[in-house]
Amino acid sequence: MINRTTTVDDVKRRIKESINKIETMFVGVVTGVDYERNRYGVQPILKHTASDGNLIDMPILANCPMCFTKTKDFYIRSPYVIGDVVYVGCSKDSIDESIQSNQPVENRNNGVSKFRLIDGVILGGVMTDEEPVLDSEYTEDFIIQNRQNKDLVVIKKSDGILMKTGVKVDIDSPITNIKGVLNVDGVTNLKSEANITGATTITNVVNTTGMVTTGGGVSITGGQTMTMDGGSIDGIGNITSTGAIVGNTVYATSTKNSL
Image 1: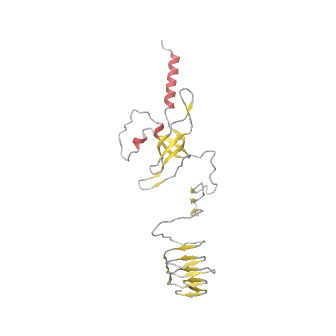
Image 2: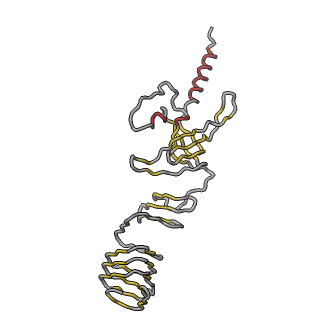
Image 3: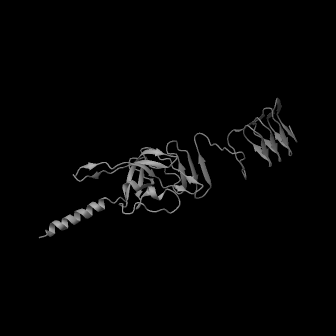
């Protein structure tokens, strides 16, 4: 005679075991990085209960891809480092089979368990309660910030774009075009030629080792200096100086078509 109680309990146990084998999403810690292939090692944070009742560490995902903003030609990469906390989602089918190329392929893992731990994909970073809070500035704006040195780029909801750094900004380009007014509050160093098609006002020091060509007037005011080392100034408009040094000649006060 069948023991109905035992059968029901056995079915419940088997259902529970099957459910526990389904991995949907979990929080993990980055244990290894491969930036070129965009693959990471991830250790699930929460321990699981073994059949004997003991808590055990979950296995490390050694080759976990990351979901990030990318197209065929462009990408934005967040450089996760060892120790970062991430949120991982598990694919229903084999992730290795799914991301070999952009062409449909046969599912060679039909019949294999679904939602496996090894088919996880990093969905994004997660802040822990122990981490320092984010800055309270620019809460309504789009921000990219280095949390260590506070360098940042802010696309504001209004009032333009802000770039702030404690070191420098490098622009590596054969040609840089700026349309509109360029205001410089500090020292400007020019190591090549400067071609200016409009009027130029200088209220601070300009150092150049090349030629300065202007299609409008050049105004050097406020007792500041413009130092030319082996170069020249070609001006179509008037050049007004209250203290310019060109070569070995000092122009204390002058207004000329050229210095």
